[in-house]
Length: 266
Image (cartoon, rainbow, N blue to C red; front, side, top):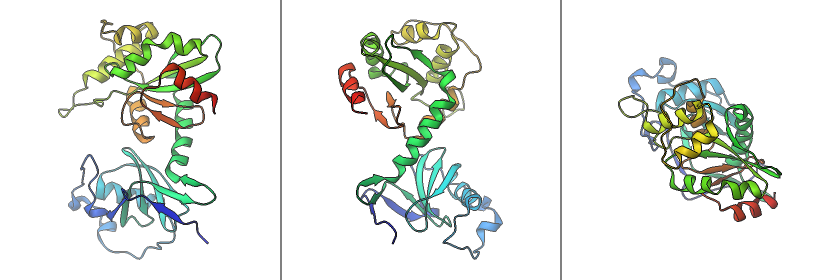
């Protein structure tokens, strides 16, 4: 007996060809591969990952990074370059929203996969983070940050308090304006963060930047774009966004005492 699922009222199930997500990117149907344009006999009980990737890309312009089965019959979870979605195995139906498993406990199926991805990403980028290490480290949090974000600045000004409570901060870059503007030029937010990461003293540069002090323009090979893409994939839609050692994520500012109390419950 398959587990029953609760789909929240916000969940929208729609035929792929008519789906509009927040970017409203719909591929030209004239460019749909001929193999997809013609109806084909597909075993809807089997997940064909490669075919699904091709179909979602052709119909919606979304790049599927990962596709996996869920406990829901015929429904796959999709990790894309623009976030997490669901679809039918054959790609005829596309779902935006949350799906819960109702067993002994209520489980957010997406959050399970996202937590795993966050842990993998934190490991991947661990050598490219700007770290403010607590002298007597008890906890480690990884925070997506931007220079102009008001609450990011407030949090950074309290760094001594966080560190005194044994909380080490590790920063990942998340330019809120994105990587490029509509003309295809790098945004100021991206260039500012890149300059911080490329600085010979990135910790001081971060502090200066968040206090509106000039740090000078710098260019180097740092994975700012990759960190931003990682954030989008794992559910970041604003800064600060705090990832815990469990893979859970807390959106928004957390005062030192409140964050310490939360970490003590892990």
